[in-house]
Structure formats: C-alpha cells, structure tokens
Length: 176
Image (cartoon, rainbow, N blue to C red; front, side):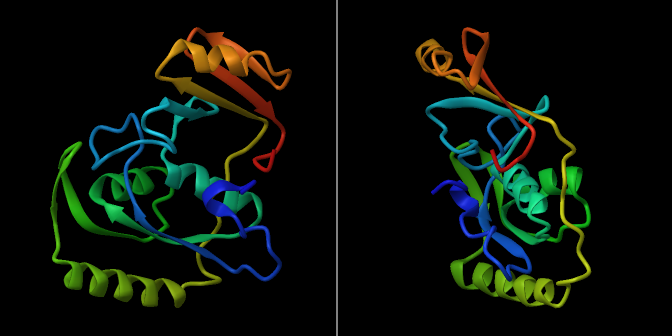
C-alpha cells in the first residue's frame, strides 16, 4: 500500500477520514503499546523535527489531499496528542493508558457505543472541519532501534544518514 494506513485517501470523492482505534506515538509521555508504525524497528519517526504519532502523519497526509480528519478515537494518549497538533479535530478516548502494557478501558459494548456516537457527530461536521496541513518541504527522520537499518537505508540515493540510528528522506510533498 503506497499510502500505508491512508490507502484510498487519494481517491476521487473522499470527503473526510476517521481514525478508529489509534494510540500514542513512540516517544509520547504515555500510551498503550505506543509506537509509530513499527514498535520494534522505529524508536522515533520525526517529520520536520516533530516526533510523530501515526495520527499526526496520517492527518497530515490526508490534509495534503485536502481531506479533513473529522475524528480520532483510541487511547487518551492519542487524544491528547491530537489536541496539541490540531485542536479542532474531535477525539474520543475509550481507554486510559496506565503504562505501556496496562490500560483502564470501557467495556467493549460501552466503547462501541461511545465511538458510534462520536462518529455520528463527526459526520455532521463534514464540510466544517479544516484539513490538518504541514508546510513543506519535508524531512522525514526514521530513528531506528538498531544501527543496521539506518545504514542500509543510507545506501539508497533518496536517503541520507543523520547519525548511526537515523536515516533522513527529504521531499517536497507528503505524497513522496
């Protein structure tokens, strides 16, 4: 999938996106199983120097296609992160991170009802929520949990090595 979790956002007629079941980013202060795309591989993923969660990167990619993110649901960590980078995007927390592998959550039925109500409300806001955008050009830093991966990416002409753990990809578009 060329656009990873956002596959399809580039299709004609997409009016909005919702992110359901998300979690905090790899370097956030807390979050249940917090990671960014691959917890065993990436220690951090940064876009233009900002440590990113999947919600941040996905909302920015959607914004490049002029598609607003109208709802993010998941743990309290991702909801706090969204409130920081795009406070106009509604969120719905269905669990509270106690630690990386411990959560205090709603019963599944209660969580589903809460997400359903938030989704219904979000659908009413289509056309009233602005897309989240990040100004380019872009530098995507992939900080690996090992030295080998960064070094391998550094062999590709589109990547540069920042330090022994970090490979950088520069682009003029989020679509790259």
